[in-house]
Image (cartoon, rainbow, N blue to C red):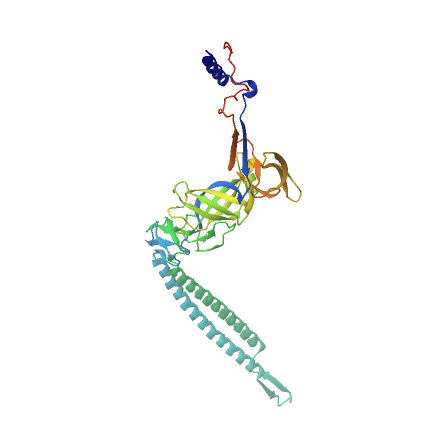
Length: 431
């Protein structure tokens, strides 16, 4: 009976520990200060685009004779993309040549007329200057007369002026005709469209037999705010004869939340991943930030251009890109899990302070003031107040890099200690 009583009493003890012994386990999570890198990042999403694109168009009007490229072709600078029928352009050259010949003849004729008028003026002036004197024998009065007249000189001068004006007009006509001929010849050369940049053809809008209107177009590079415009060069719009993308440098324009955008600056490094291409990653840099936000449903975002350092294999234009920009980083820094640090205030000079609970070897803790540096998502830089190897107590939430220490009874968790004097009988037991 004694053995049974002992067994029953022991069983009752473990099944019914006293209230004072019910919470005999104590748990403390700690972390050790280590040297490492702390980074602050922000994320956004965009789509892949070429840093430089061009959509060249014919600078003259005409009918398309040939289309010499197709989508996917890789072209070099100066490579022929297409041609126009030059029949009308050749006719324009012939007409311009005829106009030049006619203008030259007019200049020659006007020159001869000017020479003749100048000769007539010279003769009139000579006649006016030539005089004869006669004497009346009855009266003895002498009379001097001129072979010419002043009116003849005046008329001759007018003819010279008119002839000179005709020469000027003829020479101007010749100059214009010469310019027109040069333009006509240049237009013939413009009937051949060439690539302004090297790259991959991403669109072809021209078709043989269609009519095109000559005009101006523009070239552009991602991250710029303006595009230079020149006649017959390149265009970012797909309205050109073809569209070419320089695939050697890729970018993505990602929209960042208003608060995150305040942390952006040109030159920051970024990591880019591509959901559609398994394992594809790229390093990149922030190359431009829009100064103007875009509001959508009262949410303001700012676009930033991220330029990839290299183009990963398999990545295509238009694919989704997930961008993570490192806005701050500290290397060789004393680090602690972020939930081991209570962040305090930031002074006017930008210094941020906080507190940590340092744990001594004997288990005692001391609240210590620290200077905080870069605050990452999971770790925080400690500038001063903690040394490498120091142990700190973290919050009871799960923490990265923490150690859990549990103290339990010698009979395992949930059981009680053996009472002094041995087991006592439970209710109904006998001593």
